[in-house]
Each structure stands twice: as structure tokens, then as C-alpha cells.
Length: 153
Image (cartoon, rainbow, N blue to C red; front, top):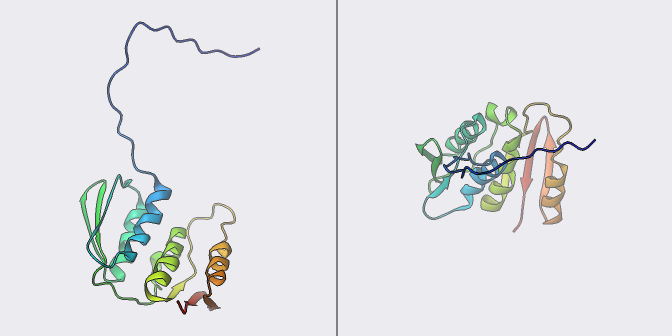
């Protein structure tokens, strides 16, 4: 038998609901912000999750200034960023840290980084990203749990 939910009207619904930002969009936007070479990047609708804090720590490791104006607004200033090896412990706590590979490769043409970690939610390979880098001409070395990726262009 088909189940039906019947709503009898007569009462207008009104009000507002605040929707938090999307995690998957935010964890990609934060590393992408380092591609900005002039000015600051403002991201609104940032969800209050630990991944945002971890990504902010990685940015600060790269000498990127991160200011959280409100619970949902981040201001990122990569103007004084330096390219150093990302062997920070957070890389191994956060699967989304692999987004820094493409962003650093795009800005500096090289990246040194530990293998991204994170919670075990089943297989989540990053090989498609690596194959994409190679298809664009990058060279990849993997040794002792770290990636070294170089691009000529």
C-alpha cells in the first residue's frame, strides 16, 4: 500500500531558516584562495567545522594571514605566502589537504607534501588528481610518504 502524507492548509508558513555553508565547497575554496596574488580573499557561509580550522592552520604554515571575522566569514591574505614543504601533522589528519597540491603547483610550479590522511571512510584515492597533474605535464615523485610534484609551466 502506498503511504501518503496529506497536509491540510489554511495556515501560511513564514519565517526564515539559516543554512550553513557546504563543507565540500569550503574545503576546496580555502586552498584555492592561495592562487590570488593580489589582495585578500573573503569567503562567506563558512561552516563551523574542524576541517576549516585545520585548513587555516596549513595556510598559516605557508605564511598566509587568516582572519575569522565571524563564525561564517574568513578573510585570507596570501600576499606574503612562502612555498615550504607541507609536512605539518594536520596534512595527515585531513584528507582535503590534497587540495593544496593543485593550488601550490599552480602558483609555484612545485609542491612537497606528505601523503594526505584523514578519517577512514572507505577508499578515497587521490590518483585521479595525480594523473591530472601528469596529463598537464607535471612530474611526480613519491618517497617515504611524501610527494614531490614539479611543473615546467
